[in-house]
Length: 452
Image 1 (tube, rainbow, N blue to C red):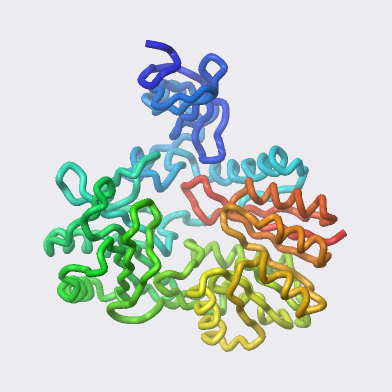
Image 2 (image 1 turned 90 degrees about the vertical axis):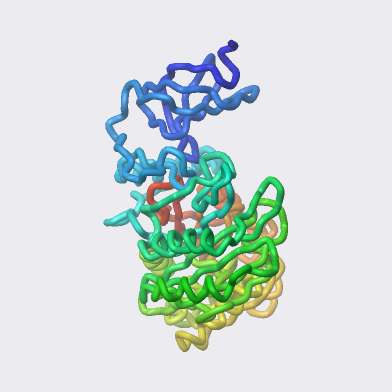
């Protein structure tokens, strides 16, 4: 057998971690990525996939362990793709996340910036307020859980240390009822069956649950009995919605959602504000760390009460509304109509009258806003993982907006966009990583860009 083909076994030294948290080693000069391994370890692996310049491997044995290695407490850690760092001490995770941000800024953006230590959680467990459970059939049995690492096979989970205990309880009860009521699980290969996903949302403020059942078909079989039995077994369940996703592929939710029982939304609290969370709302998954992040934005963008602030990529308006009491005017822009309606609901819920929200792409609406408001004092950017559209950054640079706070969930696109803004005449401040996703490789960051 060739040394460089699937199935070959090797011993190698792990010298680093890639952006996804997999260990990095080399075989005959070619890079191999090995999930679940750590820098400083000598490991035995089996190659699972090879390309011309790199490959991936499965960890077979740790021959010499790194001092930061810990024993995972989750029974599904070896297979489930939800976490990347169950084997890494939490303090070491925080350190690595800071270093990964620094590396992206230097390597991708060519920037030499000060990166503060990552702000972690005192108790980094049971923090998720939103989980998406895939439903399917494997080896003739119904399974419900999360996707296996690197595949769309479903790991049939019995517990999850990252989600609220009420969400775990609801997932297990739902799984039993789906079996009892003969609701057919979805078959991804044949695109047949009914139930595709169960999306569970939790309000940490009042400990209430919302369940969104995603089906391939317009009908949900045995709907009335399922609702009756679930709400009887889980009194904290206050809202059930039905989403229809008839298209093949990995997208979780389709376009059509309706509440079929209970309240139209949950209410979560961040600081003194309340936020309505509807079935399709985007909301940060870690409610506790969201306050840390929003307080960071407040600290980086002190306001006098007179400023006009644009909240681009505003989602349900959460950041802008958090700053509204200190600003003269907040204007949010978002592409999803449901999110704009959520933002308006949140403003009403908190009796905030100096915030308005517009439907449209940020890069399309910004030129209109610059024409309408001759003086814009600050902009909040909180884009999706792909970062900002280049035309938006060009427009901001040309407008010479005095202050821009960039909130990012992707260090790579953050580095790229900060480099563009720096080239355009902005000076970056210190970068503050916040650990919104303990035990995973993801990290959130905030940074202030000031016009020179």
